Image 1 (cartoon, rainbow, N blue to C red):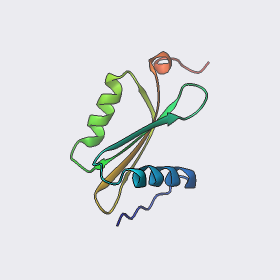
Image 2: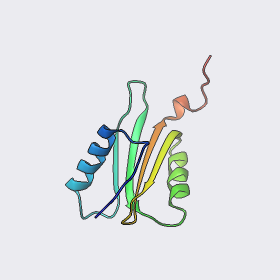
Image 3: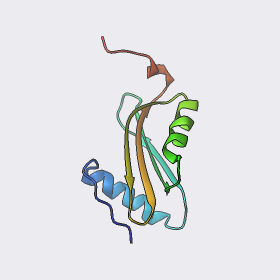
Image 4: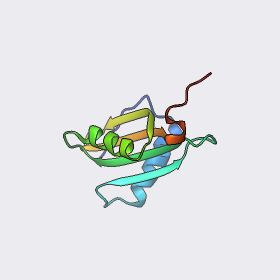
Length: 99
């Protein structure tokens, strides 16, 4: 049984992530991508088992894809599952600054 206590995720995020997991209960790593807004920002949800260095490995992979991490929500469940949600945008927005 997975127990998660989170104040950073809203109800819709928790429902969406739970539904995604229930659809594929036997996979060890689950990656889902969806549009986050209409400005080219996307949400990447990664569910995997906790391993040393997993956050830095995922962050490095996103950097290799030239994605800019705007926000990251990292949750470890009591069963050892790691739920990472990244909000990213692409290289065309990577170095732009607000005016």
